[in-house]
Length: 283
Image 1 (cartoon, rainbow, N blue to C red):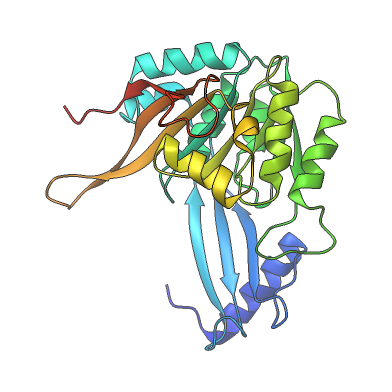
Image 2 (cartoon, rainbow, N blue to C red; image 1 turned 180 degrees about the horizontal axis):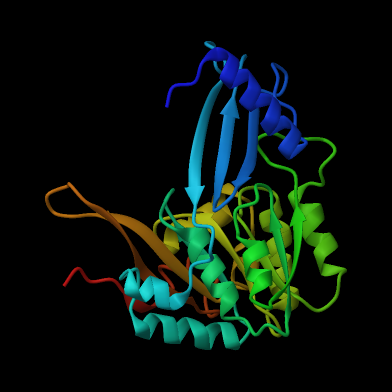
């Protein structure tokens, strides 16, 4: 579908209205969500000065109904044993991150994990771009409170920064805490929340990283969380996009489930801090 310049201008106006965020030469990036009957999509729009030729759009279609563990098992993303282990971990109120590459299904898996939490518990969901199907999960009888934080890309001044939104959520009482994606300074507040709430409620989020050590490297060396705070994390699950041997087909799989032990000081990989509970085998 190739829109005309007039269509593109019309779309940009609508997305500004939908999101309440600017899109102009001083704010050349817009991240938002588009909702139409029977469909949702994440929208990224760019314009001058970032895009010299003017407006450009990218749409990522989302499943309207939330993914569930049985659906993922049917789709062979993971097997029943993984589902049972994660259900046990969620029931124990552990802290976890779902990691993976772009398009690996991290957010869908996080949404499925939310459905494993008992509906009687309130869940606070913090996202900068609305991707988790909160409305449909509510219709299933779950108690969800959604908060929209400032995007680290667009930096709209009228929206609350993610770290402040996260700290505000801790003042709302005893709740499960779900972070749409860990990107920047909110990681410090997130691990603070894990240390506070890890003994009673699930604290979970998604992050880019293709191995457990990759997550450690990103969180500690890129985002500035101390190794001591990283120990507040209990479980890392890795989702990746794999290719068939002929390179013609791609499929999403859970490739790793790792426990973070607490008896290390500097490097969990060298000191036995990571214990693989499950590992994907192509066989």
